[in-house]
Image (cartoon, rainbow, N blue to C red; front, side, top):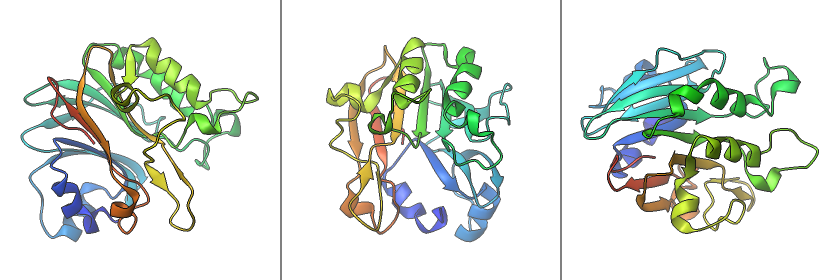
Length: 233
């Protein structure tokens, strides 16, 4: 939240594309910044102060897909155009925290959205990125739709985790955590960027806790692409 207080830190990352959860809608954000930055943005959310935003910089532009379904409140499909063109499904998965969702649907929310946008994602130039609020460390045999089920579903449409592929690390064994509790030492890897199997990353970096703890309870996941887009967060 309070993206306007962290805007300079975002710009310092020099992203071409940024997926930001828990941010205010653009009109509120620009008002608090007292300017309208040179970027394109798409945003969704029920709460004007706390939604999901995709921000495009350095000449990239965004268009919401015509098949956007508000049933999936925090999943935003956009077409990205610029030096490279591709499709992005931005994610801020509540995984059970939505008060208006039937309890039975909690665990299936992300998979249902992936299934709905399967055609949108079934190209050689599509990615899924954002805050999944999930990890295999929380998987349980008694549950339907664990995170490993989400990863499997994405693999079925030829998408892989940029971080895990680049680092050669299995899910659940991440040395770099993207979310941390400010009170206590608990921290988890719950933010992901899934890219096509044919894409390669030049570099993948996760911000350090000590650098971000005073700013946010999430560290940025930075993915530098070789031939696609130079950077996505």
